[in-house]
Length: 264
Image 1 (cartoon, rainbow, N blue to C red):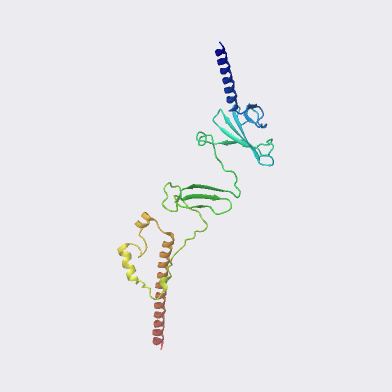
Image 2: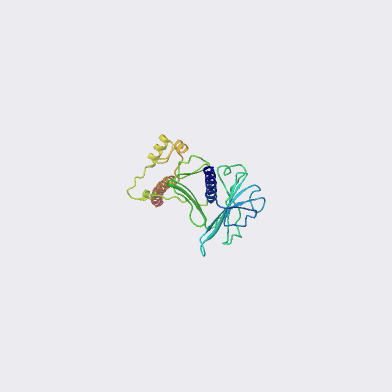
């Protein structure tokens, strides 16, 4: 009988000790109706409709305290029954002033028909969309650029740095050139004769060194290169006119000389 009593006492002691150990593993939980009231314990907030972004859900409060004279800030995470997440932070050390609730977008609500992302006015800010070895930078105060790759407008498969499937309206277009057509005016330039020009036109149907209609329709034209070639033809035409003018002046001189002889 004595053995049974001792056994019962031992079981009671073990149960009490187990209860003490078990309770020691938990932090005190406090139910708080006012979300602006921050306790030192793990707080379970009862949102209702008071300062909460959702009528039903759970709000988790987090606090960091760096001791006397140290940093002290608070954050709240709100989990609604609509599968939306929110957070806000205290803007003062007392935890009585809070920022607005900010929605956390995730894979379920990021891309849908009801969410419209519009950028507000950005001042002295920049947006960088980056991948490996490529990036896009849009800035309010400095230059904007695409670091690599091609950019297309009206086309999804650009093959050049800028491909535009449409009209470009600009006040000015500047093209960098590596050479120009003033070589036509150098003494060693081999100016074709007009007979040679006529022969090439008869055989090819276009001026020499100028692409044919078929080539232009198939490949387009290089604006800078074409301007240089057209200028070359204009300069050649200028030389023809100068030469023709010299011949006319010489003929006039000879004609005037003949008139004088006949007059005498």
